Amino acid sequence: MKLPIELKGLGKGLLVSLVLCLLSAPVIYFSGLKETIMPALGNLILAVGVFWCGCYVSKSYGSKGLLRGMTMGLTFFILTLIATFAFNSALVGFKTFLYNLALCLAAGGLGGILGIGLSDKAI
Image (cartoon, rainbow, N blue to C red; front, side, top):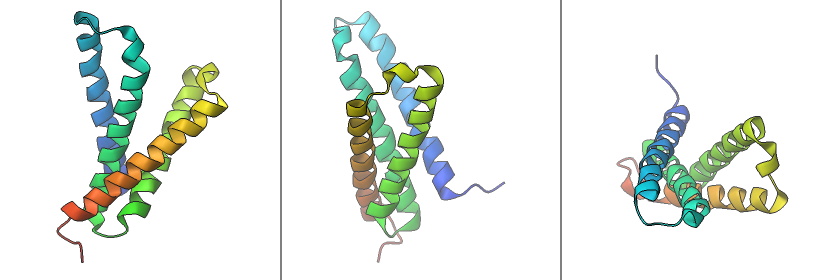
C-alpha cells in the first residue's frame, strides 16, 4: 500500500516527537534539571517534529517548500489541537492557541525551506 508523501511525513514527524518525549522524560527525572523546563521542552519537541515533517515532505517533492512546510505545520497543529480537546480541553487558551499555531507554521515553513535545499529534485 502506497501512502501519500504528506501522510508519511506526518507519521515521521509524530514519531520524532514521540521519541523525543520518551527520551526527555527520563533525562528530566534522573538529572538535576528542574521540572519547570517542561513547557519549553514541549514547545521545542513540537517545533522539531513539525520541522522534520515539513523538511521531509518538501524534500520529497522538490518544490514549493515554504508552502508545503507550512501546510504540514498547520496539519500537525490541527492534530495536536484535536488531541488536546480529546484529553484535556482546559489546556486550550487563546494565547496558547495562537502561540502553538505560530510555532507550527514557522517550524514547518523553515523545515520546508531546508527540505528544498536538501532535495535532488530542486530546480
